[in-house]
Length: 242
Image 1 (cartoon, rainbow, N blue to C red):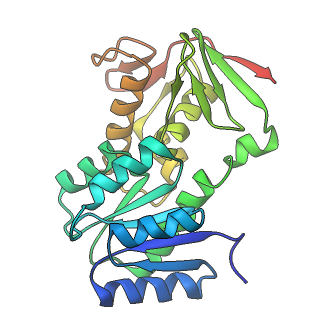
Image 2: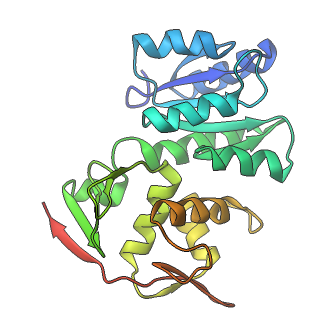
């Protein structure tokens, strides 16, 4: 039996790594499809919905970064980017184009499974807090976030697309407005207690979230930088049951 009918695609050109990963996730109860390149993945998603993609950066033909960028622009498929190296630049670029998380090769099987579970908890349907009130809407300075549908609407009516990580981060701020939140708190709430203290995910996602909220980069807008303290969401938040 599969886990909640979750369907995962493993886009990896190395046959040995691909087969090992597919076998590992299959044993954990997930339905998994191997894809040797982007073209095979495109044929797969034309037939059925994919909940999560394990996506290698270095692929023949179209690379993983390009596919990740397209997935984020056109849909809500979660992306776990797999990098050949642990270099920060690979991780940062992956997050910049919209990946929900990253994992460096060679990876520990337990860590892979833990990260897959964490991403699916955050992105499969609504997150736990939203699931309890699926039509809960939170408003701030003309913006509107529907926690059930995960839709963010700008004051001018534009729909603003958020990655799973950006959504989680914004919800943290909206749940704790006008309160200083440390970087460690944000890491804990959005990525779990096993997140490393040097993890740059929060920094990248915070930068992207600020841009999407039309927030100034100097940290003086909605999401304010508190020197030596962390970050503070300055707007008044008004919950609304739709």
